[in-house]
Amino acid sequence: MTKKLSPVDKFYEALPQYQEELEILLDPNVKRRGRKRKNKMYFTPINEKAIVAYNKEKSEAKRNKIYSEHIHYPIWKLAQNIINRFKFPYMDGSTEDKQFEVIAFLLQKLNKYTENKGRAFSYFSIVAKNYCIQTNNKAYKMLKQKTSLLAVDKQRNINNELATSDRQDSLRDFLELFIVQYDEEIETRYSKQSDKKIAYAVLELFRRRENIEKYNKKALYVLIREMTNEKTQDISKVVNIIKKEFKEKLLEYEGILGSKARWW
Image (tube, rainbow, N blue to C red; front, side):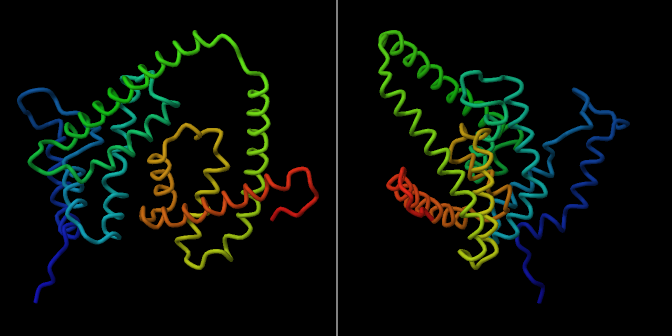
């Protein structure tokens, strides 16, 4: 009895044929009507078929494999090109920040794509541009409101500013201590290798916080997934454990500031 192939298995079985068709499509010696095809296509019909297979696949392992090999790069490149071309100056963060934000949004919409929605490249380009336009416009409106409020508020509360500065210094010192201590205990805290990978990835993001502090939550989850290749629900589980521990240790740390008590 022939074993039934999953959507991703079918994709890989037909991949040599897809690649041959793509080579013919990109062959500069084949004359066609209309605009000449570019040889350097980053979002091809193969990537389109990969997305369709990804959406139909039930196996998480196979979904991760096809995403890593045939979907991640075109989505990443599409987001990069849109941000570089249109800039969207009022969106928060650097160019790279904006790119990760768009990638995170597109990953949420990946399951919305089906063959009857036309070319995947066109579909996701429109989705990404609409998202950026809306986000940029909202940021611009908020900036205008904030500018108006600042113009009205001509007096500064110096005491509050000093207290805020002290609080930020305290949090910065605490985070450095937390990273060092937690890093030493990951091997004993977690039994599963996948959980250890996620925990190490979270601490690495803590270390890079000066460069990524403007990322939103979705983009950070994408970063952790890229670093570990683990499932979102597993990432959420470990993040929640670290979050709870972080809060408890922070309260303990703030309660003993100025004393000689042992914190950890």
